[in-house]
Image 1 (cartoon, one colour):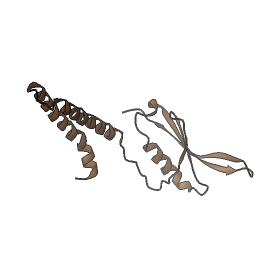
Image 2 (cartoon, helix red, strand yellow):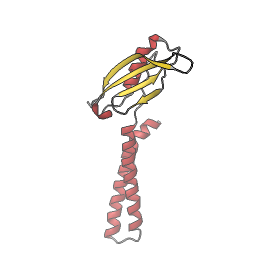
Image 3 (cartoon, helix red, strand yellow):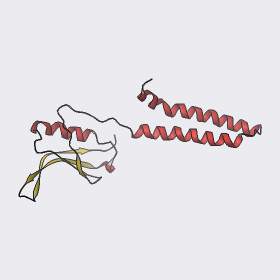
Image 4 (cartoon, one colour):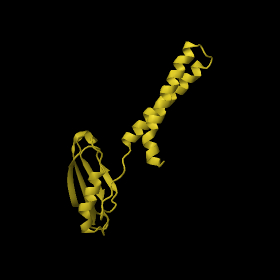
Length: 147
């Protein structure tokens, strides 16, 4: 079993184990077993593990990789409707489109309150010794509403 198969099955495994322990807990209280309070903790913990592993699966998404896209670090993200990534000086012009597409595909649906997000790639052009000017070399707008 691969890691991703195990990851997908974990909430079900912990959930079934938690339900089994819940039935055992009910039986322990009915028959007044001495371990009834210890089994409550195990039951709650296994159900908590089931819920937390389910939440992890919901938040886990693999990154989209597009051919000819280059890595650009995000230097500004206001968390709502603007993302700016920094391109190096020797950034190839033919990689602008695929890089913008890759950045937009890696945004999660439903995030950012359903805003239209502008994604920009910019370079810094040296104006003088201590002064640089940002130049936008590519821009795309993406709607991240939940479908």
